[in-house]
Amino acid sequence: MTHVVVVGGGAAGLSAALFTAKNGLETTVYDTDGTWLHKAHLFNYLGIESKDGTEFVEDAREQVDEFGVERHQGVEVTDVADTGEGFTVTTEDGEVDADYVVLATGAKRDLAEDLGCAFTDEDVVDVDVTMETSVGDCYATGAMVRAEEWQAIISAGDGAAAALNILSKEKGEHFHDFDTPADAE
Image (cartoon, rainbow, N blue to C red; front, side, top):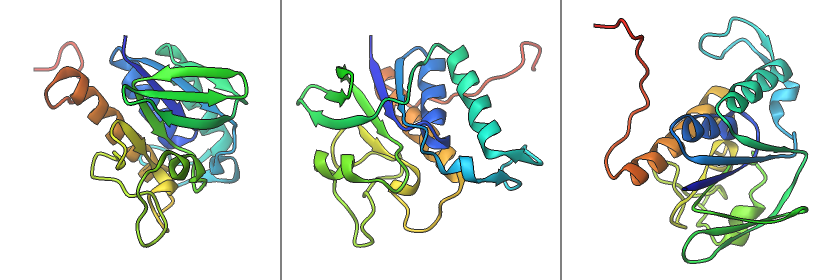
């Protein structure tokens, strides 16, 4: 089965994990719980009038757990290596192989740099519109790819874009995750 490893458990990482797991891909998240959301209160997130950032993260974790995401809370990823046929992700607990990697580590860009991802003149990870880096099947999201626009809702969108591109690659055609009620016409 296709395996997606997400490094980071903020809005971008959990959004990517939600879409990949919901659509049948084996998904693992490594999360050191360093998300900036713990310092935020959301008034500007579509659909949320007012919510504490920590409460938002806890709700998002519960949601991805319901879709079978394997979350490793408090486990740091120390290296990601391109094997030519996927990736080896190294943590303090050992190694795991992945077909795809989504980097969602905020402004901490060392894993992307060590992996050999290209950077822009603004010293952020260079990605295309699908959030894919110069290293094929490796995606970067959120503050990793933006010099200034650090918003939870933008990061969540970046994670969703990465996941939809992974799903499109896996299905061999453009994939859209669009749920409709059973009684929709």
